[in-house]
Length: 201
Image 1 (cartoon, one colour):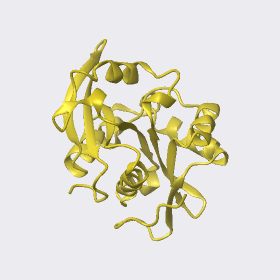
Image 2 (spheres, rainbow, N blue to C red; image 1 turned 90 degrees about the horizontal axis):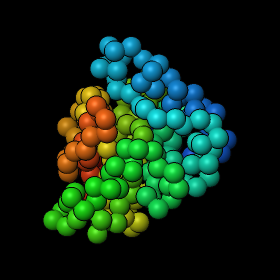
Image 3 (cartoon, rainbow, N blue to C red; image 1 turned 120 degrees about the vertical axis):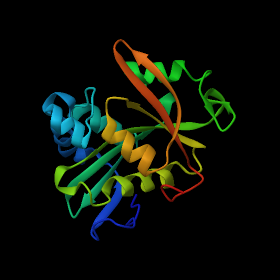
């Protein structure tokens, strides 16, 4: 499924659903941007991802329709997860914590539990494509994909990941809904309405 070219992106960029054949490139991109693979300075400057997404996991997610990619004429520029909570048989601890907090979190005046939503993230952009609108293009593609399926896209961002917070809250206008903590790590929950397809509006 092609998402088209978003404003500000590289002309050849194709935003589409990931397929199984994308899994090796996606795994490489995820590993290169993992918390453990980056220095403290790199994490502060560009953000990071955590968790374990190997080739087999990413292939399965792609086959289930839970990933979007930015494809620059065959080169993987970025990836974004977008999945229904019901399609996660073994959610990682942060997702479990978010789902457990649905009664205390509100979306537009009602409990999150009563709101049809999709889980947004992780988001990863390859180093050569940062600052070129790829994250915004993926976000816009995710809104288009989610429209009609859910009222909101909901994400959790580790509060230490200031770069991701700046992109999604300050840049794209996602709304903070609350926080939760797992051990010594704090996370913010943010959301975006699927009724708009233009980030920041």
